[in-house]
Amino acid sequence: MPEKLIAPSILAADFGNLQRDVEMVNNSDADWFHIDVMDGHFVPNISYGMPVIEAIKKHAKKPLDVHLMIEKPERYIEEFARVGADIISVHYESTVHLHRTLCQIEDAGCKPAVVLNLTTPVSVLEDILPKCYMVLLMSINPGFGGQKFEQMTYNRIKKLRKMIDDQGLDTLIEIDGGVTNLNAKQLVDAGANVFVAGSYIFKSANQPETIKSLRTLVNS
Ligand code: DX5
Ligand code: ZN
Image 1 (cartoon, protein in one colour):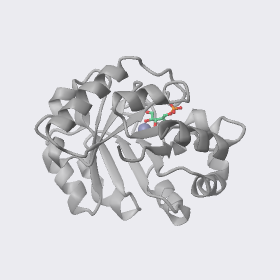
Image 2: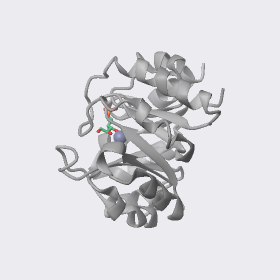
Image 3: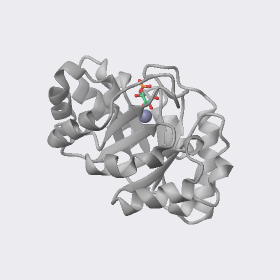
């Protein structure tokens, strides 16, 4: 099994000390920066956009995993690539021509990923899987950090893992929402590869230590 990855969610960082928090992630055992973009339409919250991502990119020494919670993301793919996205995830529910949008992400030089909301069946991805570098399964309703992990996620991971293995692919499965040391091992056992954690990391007293122990746990 390949190594499991940790992606701290910048949504939970201290924006008054953003450079400090970016350096913390740089110097930690984390693998990626997870960056949540919200437009106030697709989700009932507004976060940040291109200028903030550009500022993060200036200091980041690890890949930027950009999670777009916006309607019609195809309007902005090239812009997100320009400001430094390495992986771009679009919601299945947000774009009508998903295949075209994933091609657009590739053409912009980024790795394409698809996100599914809690109640979107994983089976909708069957035909598009070969085009996905990664599938992000939401384990909460998107829009806010600090929510409770939904137990239904385990079964969804298992179904998706089977689809990926049956097709002989190496598509990554990322989990986002309510990830902590209490559910991480079970998520690994179900078949997940990448773990986003926001409040669990940034609200902890020793953030690098929390990242380190989470990473050790998922790789044990
Ligand atoms: C929510 C975002 C998540 C969020 C996770 O819509 O997609 O990335 O930051 O935060 P926690 O880990 O606190 O649930
Ligand atoms: Zn996210």
